[in-house]
Length: 423
Image 1 (spheres, rainbow, N blue to C red):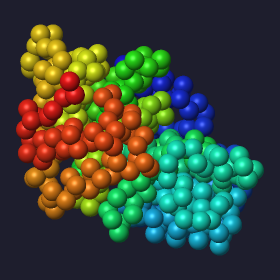
Image 2: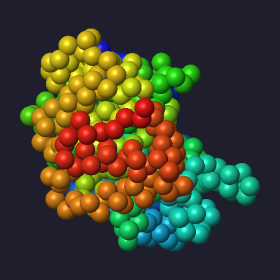
Image 3: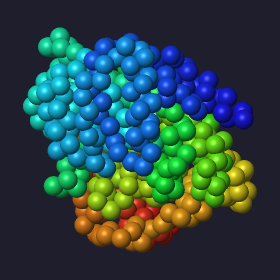
């Protein structure tokens, strides 16, 4: 349980009393909501068992003196921009003092974006990028609607972060609002809610949290807060490597479910300390064929080989975790540079295969070379350049085709050896 205690300590350092998490904590919703207002709009997901959870939330709100002034249906997967506009329209009709989101990352992200539109109107397109909402708030002296996020999936950690991932379904492309202003000021996650989650959602979510920890760790090399990021990543990655395979075998394991909840929350902490990079960037162009977490998981081994010469210390740490979990049998002490990256990438592929993930994009139904073209085009979009620049081996729009194309071709075929490193 050392990793459990370490995770709890790290999360308290991150969020303090603004975040309540653990087993059986949902009845504490009201005390958090009352800190934000007395008239709440609830934006909610619907799934098996949700009604009893809503009853718990409603009773908790009533006990705390918070009125529920209306209910709004949550967002579809990947938070389509149409759902953002619909939620914004309903919020304007209800005019609440606070908004409560109850759902997975898509609904929470949609509420973040809808709250921005509630304050400023306009089209969500104008807010994609970094820091634009904060600037508008400063210039206008407006405030966003207070937001209590109730997470229901161990996955994106949207309840803890400054990111809102919104999808334009017409072009199957995801874009980002990145802004400290949209971090929900209060959040709650009762890990018991995940006990009956489908195994596919469990695996996708856990690997999303893993990818957050991993990519931020890779990008932190040489930066002043590397040690802090390393400590968060080490615990988060260890929890996924230990508990994800066991939860896939025994779905209702409370210890494993709590471990994955803590791990994905640490993924949220990671992306507030630093940024993701290659796998996340490419995943935004695969939304029509893969869930976000699965796309990131499939791509990270290939980006690992590309980044390898620049991330030797992180690779040794991650490699030791995978070695202890039985996914790597090679003596890593003898390996250096690209060879170390290849070994760690093979370990990641072994974990993914153990939980039933495909390891080649060509095995994904609906995938085609058009997805590669779309990903290369997106990588050159100035709205997403933060991911490109945040790579441990940075690329520019001019070098994307030379170096990213071989990575994506390798991910298509499963041939790690075909990845080209920057001299």
